[in-house]
Amino acid sequence: MNEIDLKKEFAECLLKYPNDPFKAALEVFPDDNGIALKMANEWPIDKEVLAFKKELLKDRDPLDFVPQKAELAMKIWNAMNTPGIYVEDLAKLGKLYHEIIKKEEKGGEVLNSLGDAFAEISKRLPV
Image 1 (tube, rainbow, N blue to C red):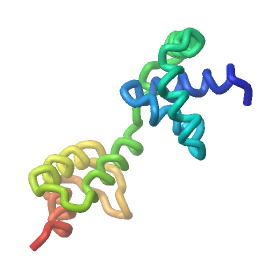
Image 2 (image 1 turned 60 degrees about the horizontal axis):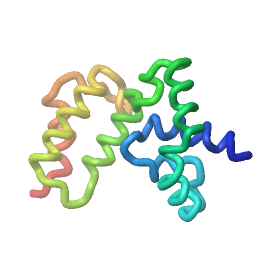
Image 3 (image 1 turned 45 degrees about the vertical axis):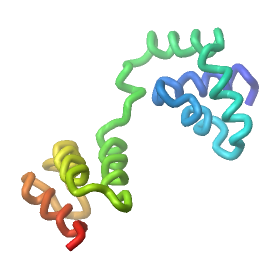
Image 4 (image 1 turned 180 degrees about the horizontal axis):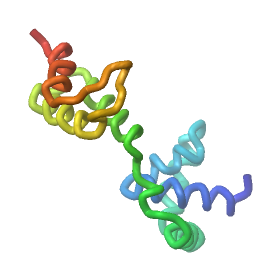
């Protein structure tokens, strides 16, 4: 891939992670932290990258660059499974998770009520 193509890809990833250029760079170069670090430090203000970002936003819906329902639910689920999470945080994440997946199948079951979601979460709470 040439530098122009890399900058286009980085611009798109930067729209997904506007506050984390290193994460955006790792999507472009997942196996080379050195290149990703250099990219994260230099390219967010690169004129070509800025132009590509502007072009992408002109041509596409801005919602194309934010997590969709399934991706967001997965991120919340992963946060809920963080070792040592506080019970209060787990409850808040559980409520948010439920709001995202309500009335959709999850593991063959349908969580239709907040009570179902909290019952699922409570199985993991320390006794």
